[in-house]
Length: 247
Image (cartoon, rainbow, N blue to C red; front, side):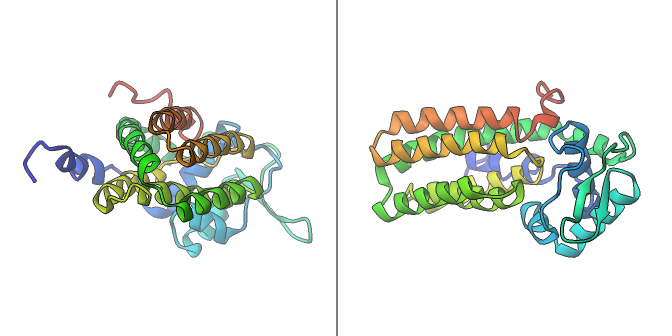
C-alpha cells in the first residue's frame, strides 16, 4: 500500500485516534445530549439496559452505571413496578453533564467520517447492485422487516448495523467490506439515540435500496445510498450538525 492512497487514509490516526471520553462518560454524554436536544422526550422510557449496552457498544455494567449517574444528575429517573424502568425525567436538568462539550469537540472528526462513509456507501451500493446474491437480497428484506417492527432505537440500531454490513458483503469484495465496516463502526461510536419516527424514515430508504439491488440498478442504488447518508447527518448526528462542519 503506497503512502497517500485511499486505504492508507482510512487507516490513518485521524480515523482511529478521535479524542474520546471513557466508555462510561461517553454513554452519559450521548444520552444527555439526546435529552437536551429533545430526541428523548420527558417521560420517555429508555430501552432495557442490555439493549442500550449493545447499541452503544459498551458493557452492560458500564451502561447501568451511566444510567444511575444520569438519574443522580437529574436527567433520568428510575421507577419501580410493572410500568417502571428508567425514564427521562419530567423536567430534565440541563447543563449538568459537562462531558457533552468534549463529545462536541470531536464534531470535525465525525463530519469527516460521515464524508468517508458517503463515498464508501455509494460505491458499496453500486457494486452490490451488480453482485448481490438472491439469498443476500432476501436477508436484507428480512432485516428491513425487523427494523419496521423494532420497539425502540436500541433494537433498531442492532438490525441497522447488520443491514449495512450485509450490503457491504454483497459487493463480493471482502477487502472493500472490511474498509466500509471500519468507518461504519467508528461512526457508530458517535451516534445519538433517535426517535423511532426518524428511524422509520431511515428504514424507508433501506427498503428503496433493497429494491434497487433486486432490480440490478447500480445508479439508483448509489443515489439512494447518497441520500441515506446525508439524511443521517441531519438526524442520527443532529447534535453535531452545528459543530465542526468546516473543521
